[in-house]
Image (cartoon, rainbow, N blue to C red; front, side):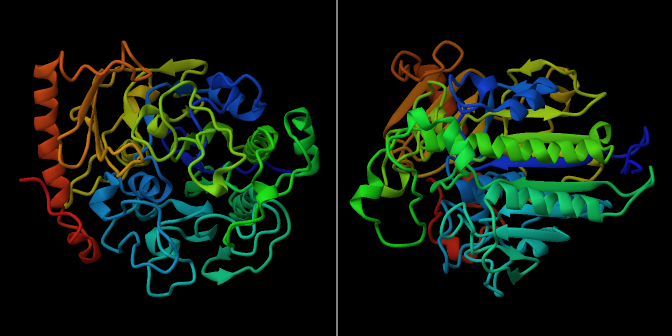
Length: 467
């Protein structure tokens, strides 16, 4: 079989594969220090490139995180404040310009496989769908699989419902991704490059895994693994008994195996050297601090960072992330550069050759220097808005300093993350000058977001800004 080479000439743009996990914690991979979970393929991918230790998600929850990733804008600018339930008016509006659209417009072939969750339903013709936001082809589900990871019934392909699809979600997404890749049918070094967004379903609740993967962690599971059904009323009490971490660990290992299968397909097509592969997670994990019944039996690790999914503490927003690009990124390297998922759009603009939109505020910054092993310094702080479970609404990181504040700015906490990465010692009283300067930055940033020119009408009433 002749190897397929897409965009491999020295002066060509690289292919780009963006793999985005769902609810994977900073400490949930072997290479980030997990003591038990086996993730050999992702660990190897990280070793083949640069691993980031200060990568942040745009939000501690799924839909806003994905909005920031796609637009290069902090998600409250697009009105996406939280996860998007079915049947609501919330969506990524047509006025937003996505990474996929920008890459497609400069000649990239584009594909989405996995989770979309940037509207209120893939069956809602009145709302924007992945095809409206730059994806030539797509196979996705709205938020989470129904009834669970095995034989899901809610995948759509290019707008058409697929009904029940046999298999497990990680395998289904990778099957479709490999099929799309092979279907490009290109055999020329000058063929158009491609952008693939593999939005994995795992390890979001609830879990169903192949028996052989559950067996890997059987000694950590009490009773027989039985998946809780999504989208139904509260299940029987016996299903909500904590069964131990085995099923959660198996779910991540199964995702790792399927990503490994996809990476092998890239190699088989002769695409390793011409492809930039990016891996990250959308937000922090559900730890054993369970807050909802559907979270029982999730055992995510933040690597010791404070908080969890839904928090503006580090555990809710700091994520594993790594990049592989042979010949450009030095293998086996790490970087402590402070970057955010919304930085990917301007970074990929520098790599993929498109212009960053100049008709709207863009919060992301180009950190392609990091990939070349060069210094990178941010021009502005990282910014978050989110109504978290701890009563905070804002977070700001500027260098070593991180500010947390409620919406009225009456409760503030200040941490030096270089000295205190676990956010133990609140320095708001001792460092009044730093606090004052960061509050001024926060007020200016919040006012900009509140007055964003693209704020949807359905959201304007919620954003009145700060006086």
